[in-house]
Structures are given as structure tokens and as C-alpha cells.
Length: 291
Image (cartoon, rainbow, N blue to C red; front, top):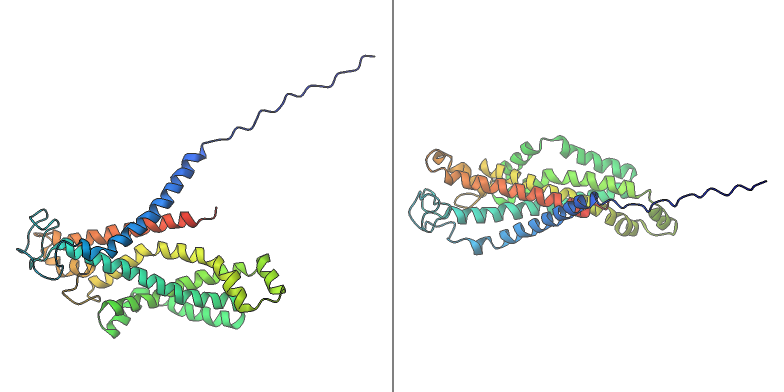
């Protein structure tokens, strides 16, 4: 009886590595580094604003109401002969660093509250979160306006007012991350090894919550620029003749139909600054995305 020969199984073809996703990954990487670079560029522009300003932003340096493109006035001059470009640059500096100050203070206060609430738990968590909810329940713009109205107009009081209503968001984010990290095996192992609660919180919990807080903060830059400009527009910022973008637009609204560049140029600067903050924040989010 003939013995059947075993069937010959053809070798499976080598797996084909698809390159369809490579352009998408390259675009994502470009977006991430482009956003981070834009954040650095705008910060440098704000740092060098007074150096780059061609004229004194507070003093009349020429004829009033000169249109954009006039000699010595790339963006025109205002009603008393001050350079609009110089005032826009200095106002950009105040808005950008004001937003960064609010974010830094909000991360500090909210991070401490969220870390303590998430790490300790129990009644401490309940009390701190109900205190945070109290601030979240109040209308943020109304509370900020009330604080500035009570303390008086000025950049410091405006930043304090916005900081009062901004930190609860970071407290909630950090607390949520900490509560998630508490159940991780490495945290449980450290607890079983006898590591103190403070050391666990600072070494094993806090570093894991930092990326989420930084991403949230980077995405808040644009919103904070608009918030500070809005309070300044309402007259709650620096008193005249300080160069503030929102205040300059509000004070010169009467020139909107004839000498449009006086109120419009600061408004365009606010729009571009907020757009740069949003793009930069999105780039930082992609850069810190672990996936």
C-alpha cells in the first residue's frame, strides 16, 4: 500500500509593515514640537517686548491719529501720538505673563489641595472637596469682578481675583489622578514596605499627577489671556496710561469707525495671543501623551 506523502504547506508570506500610519505619526510629532516651540517663541517675545518696542509706549512720540504704515508708526498712532505697536507689545507682555502667574499660583494651590485630599482620603478628602465645590459653584466672572471691585483696579488685584476662581479646576484634576494612582501596585508595595505617607505622596503619587496637571494648565493659557483681557476691557486692570490690550480697546472704541486701528490692533493681538496659547497647549498635550 502506497504511503501518502505529507502535504506541503507553503510558507506564509512575511508580514507587510504598513506605512500608512507613518505620515500621521510624523504630523503628530510635528504638531507637538511646533506647539512647544510656539510656546517658547511667544514667551521670548513677551520677555523682549520692551526691547523690541520701537517707541516709548507711554509717551507721545509724534503726530496723533497716524494710520498704519506711516513713518515711525508701523501700526499707526493713537489719539495723543503714542505708538500703537509699542503699546501692543507691552500689553502682550502683561497678558502673557499675567496668564502664566495665574496658572503657576493655581497649580501650586490646587496641586496641594488635590494631593492632600487624594492621598489622605476620608473626612479630609470630603472637607477639602466640599470647599473646592464652593468655589466651583460660584460664577467665576462675577466672583472675579467682585474681588477686583473690593480690592480696587490694578494688575495685582486682577491676577489675584482670577487666581481665586482658577485653582479649583487643578485641585479636582490632581485629586482624581492621585486617587487613581493609590491603587497601583507600586504604591501598594511601598505602603506594605512601611514607607511613610508623606514620602509615598511626594515620591510615588505626585509625579504621576504632574503630566495631567501640566496638560490642563497649558490648555488654559488661551482662556486666561481672554479672561484677563476681558477684565481689563471692563476697566478692572491697570489704570491709564498703562498699556493693556483690553483696556486700550475699550478706551478707544469711539475711534472705531474712523481711526479703526487704535481699538482694533489690541483686539487682534488678544486674538493671536489666545490662538498661540491654544495651539501651544495642544502641542504640549500631544508631547506629554504617553501613548
